[in-house]
Image 1 (cartoon, rainbow, N blue to C red):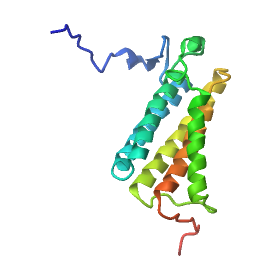
Image 2 (image 1 turned 90 degrees about the vertical axis):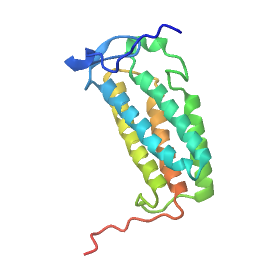
Image 3 (image 1 turned 30 degrees about the horizontal axis):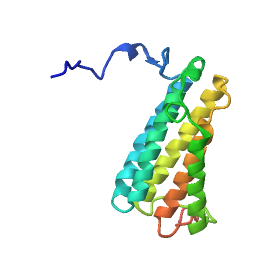
Length: 192
């Protein structure tokens, strides 16, 4: 039997309010990087909820959502790397590439060609899958905002993280509309 080493979930290294980075270094847990990749991690979890719901009705979407969850680990790895170590990142593994953005654009275009575009604001929640996709979209939008803050604060140029997150949020909005049978337009007002 192989000699197994016990690994604990807690290390106590973060008890001082710092966290370790990919390829070394430590920063405060509320630094721009951990804020960005922490929100990306939230997006992974939100997509997990949508994936479970898609499993019952749309196995192709379920598979795509799993792929997107895995791609968000690439986003997280890039965001969790100090700028001085970016040269160590591997395209498509720990570095976001333009090739990761293109399939999202193709899916957006496909859905738009098949369903068209709503002409009014849409009220989310027609069904559980569409609602879960909309929640995931809003988390991805927050991750995008955090990534903008991080890349600006650290002078990171040429990163594809922000374009990827932008396109992912756009795709999730379209996927939510595709999951609905009709769109419920916003009417405004309080009804009273």
